[in-house]
Image 1 (cartoon, one colour):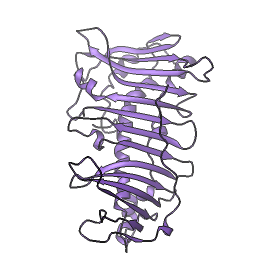
Image 2 (cartoon, one colour):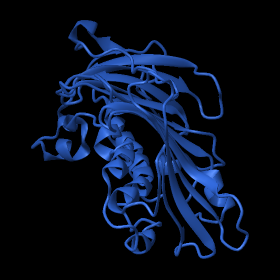
Image 3 (cartoon, helix red, strand yellow):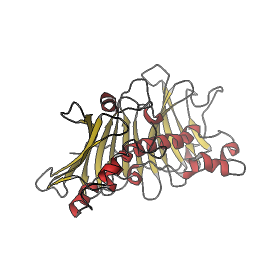
Length: 338
C-alpha cells in the first residue's frame, strides 16, 4: 500500500464535500478532534546514525571501516523496518487527518459525524466518520472517545461497515493512550481496495501518558501479502526523552528465514540485541544470538554458539561483553484501551 505522501489520499474527494459543512470548529468539536493520534506521537524514531544515508556520508563509510567482528547488519535493518512501520502509521493517519481539516456535518452532545458522502475514487460507495464520547467510570478524570471510519454500498443502503475503528482515553493525543485497527478485509468486502491493498488487519496501540512513549503495531494474519513490507509480527517501540530506546521488530533474509529482533540503543546509536532465528517454513526458532555495536554500527561483541549470524564462515562469536553499552529494558506491553 502506498502512504499518503506517495500519492493523494484515496478519500481526498471528501474534502470538497466537507468544505460545504457547518462553518468553523466549536470548542467541543476540538475536544473530539484532539482525541486523534498525531504522526509524531506514534512513529518510530531510531537513531540517525543507523540511517543508510548517514553511513554513505562518511568519507570512508562506517560500514566499510568496521574490522574484526564486522558490521551490525541486523541492527542496520532497523532503519528500513522503521520506515515500513512509519509508512503503515502514515497511511492510517492519512485517513484520520481529514477530520482535522473540516468541521463535522452533524453534532450532538456526545457525538460528531462527518458525512455520509460519496467516495469518488470508488463509485457506488459512500462513507461516514462517527465519533462518540463516554466516561468509563463516574470518577474517571478523562472521557473515552471512540471513532469509526465506515462505508457502504449507496444503492443497497442499510448499515455501514467499519473500516477503521479507534479509541482514546486522555487529555489529548500527546497525553493519553489509544488504540486503532484498520480492517483490510472490510475494505475488500465493500469494494474499496486498490491493486496493492493487503488482506488481514493492522492493530496499533500507543501510550503517551508518561515516559517512555510506547507504540505497538501488529500485522494480523493476511493472505500471502505483507502490508507495507512488514512481516506478521508484534512490533514494539519505546522512546525515551534522552534519545535512547527499544525496538522489537522482525525481518526475513534472502532465504526467507525469520529473524525476530529485540534491540536496545542509546542516544548515539550504540546498542545490543538478541535475535531469534527461524528457518523458512518452520514454526519454532532453532537458535538465537546476541550482539553489541558502537554508534557507527561496528560489532564489539557477538555470542552465537550456532554460528547463525555469519553465513559462510565458522566461529561468529568474539569480542567482549564488557564493551556493551547500557540500554533501556524491554518495551512495555500495552493493554487494550478500556
